[in-house]
Length: 339
Figure (cartoon, rainbow, N blue to C red):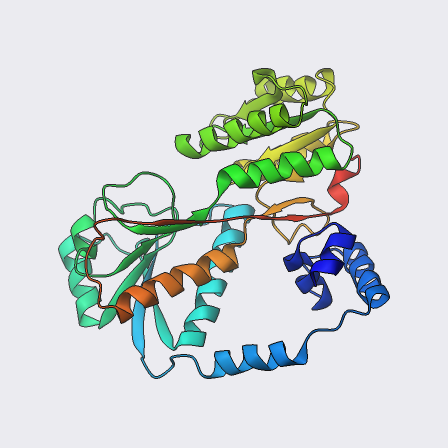
């Protein structure tokens, strides 16, 4: 598989998805990878396929337990909803593999106190807890989690010490910048929304500037645009569109989610002769190029880490919490062509 990936200029994961006809890979890319695989005579190793099936079938399904996952966000728009849907799908698939039952606790439906929430978890026989992003009310409900193994899916600072599984934001942005430069673009700019959590915004902007510097491309603060979707205005939109055109940028890296996503896509459609790539790739937009944050993989690892803690009878907050940062995956699409 590595030889196919090297010749195609993509990752092993992209090859694997393409050979399984996964819709996340564009038809053009799938056809190219299949052709290269045929030329190289690549065939999946049947012994490895049988081994994978054996390991899946003989996993620890007899050790049943129930894990709660905590939801706390209303619809956050196309990007956030898609991310959370795929995150849950990854959790459910891995939970089924290891024999874990998942039970949702939706903080949107009721105003829980910490004591009442803890009692609910105990009464339902919950063995561990996964907290999904954005983890609203997480700190306020701190005492509810204390008796349970816990895995957290957000990177922002919290009052609770917990193991985390998150996106590697720095490497994702670096991957996006290197990918557009490798495809011949000379002058990228970044647009982000100011509602992004500060620590994540710092990581992303630092990665953007640093990767340009390492690759000897021009970089400056003027290449980063901030849009506040909480207070949209015609003037702000005009300044952004004029800035992109007058700055001579040939590609816009979009790091916008939530309610501002639809707005930024509309604005970019007004900017003539500019290509785009998306830092929060949503595969319902089939033509987009950009970075897939691998939410299914993040969800699966969250389940694996929690299951390990349960198996080792770990209770409460860890003395030394760990963070697992999952790298993103680049996908080619049509959006790197001019609008």
